Image 1 (cartoon, rainbow, N blue to C red):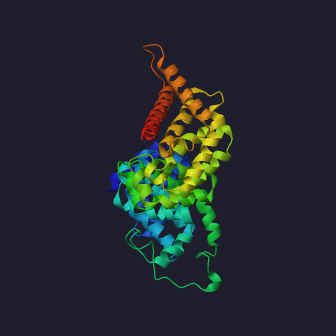
Image 2: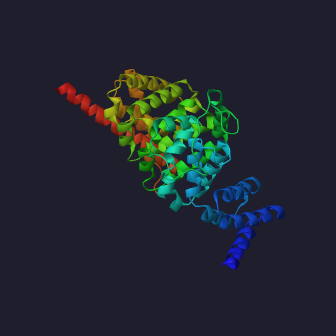
Image 3: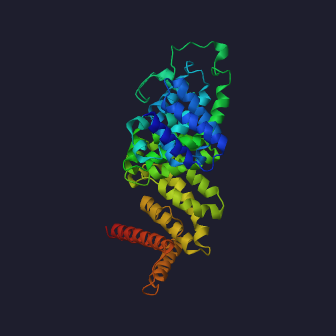
Length: 403
């Protein structure tokens, strides 16, 4: 057994070609320590040495697999529980526990089997809470006292919690302030949290798993914080959640949060430069609600009229095929929500229909045998979608006149 362990260690280290000799020796000893660790303290010591002296980018897949097999999912889950509950028995500050726990989960989630494991899925509420609330999640969880959203089992080295004095409120066991730890979380650990959530989202039932564990309100709070990287990552993940079959379910469960987010995005769209607006067209389409939800909100109806006003100069300018496709897809979706009432003056409506007709005809007149590029296919889809919406609205309008 010992010979096999030694052979596996040599194979794992041999693959790490970018490691220098000193790093290889440390890694060799750490892998041996991980496999033969008798308690959490020994495991943590080995892991901390690996993460500090051997960056993950320099470790080959066999070595990473050896680390995963030695650690498993139980340890990173307990690391997060320990940090969130603010227990002091581990002897490590919360930042160290969170950093190590999220890093391990991010690495483990690269394997689809690990990403779909029930024990990893139980950490999703914790990760979402850390992204949305930072270490304030600790106080909320202790106040609520609900264990359902936490991984089962005790924390690392957990012992009976001691009550803090008033003078120690807002400080960790190592004396550092919670505000400082929250800042570090945003900069150093948010990426790992998003890696785990994105990996889960990519699973066959991943969007449902995230939706059922409170991803929508948590990610909306992350967007509201408006911190550059987190803002974009949260929007991207929300867009994935709202682009598939879970869209109607998400809007039915969290209409207030999603409506507030859409109003914010609409305002950003109207206030952005022309070039940025083209990039935001596809994004805005993802966050539009189902028609039944839209009709109930006068505030959204007003916001959509401002979006139409921002689209007018764009449609009157000279556009590339990709740009006109983005604009027409958004226009078709807006038309499905509120019809022609919010579009604007009749002249602009005529211009809109005319541009769509011309672009469709130009696309269909491509020489036979030519393969349409993905960009042109997307553009034609936008044009046809818009014209289909126009025909439906015109039919309804003529039927109303007859009646």
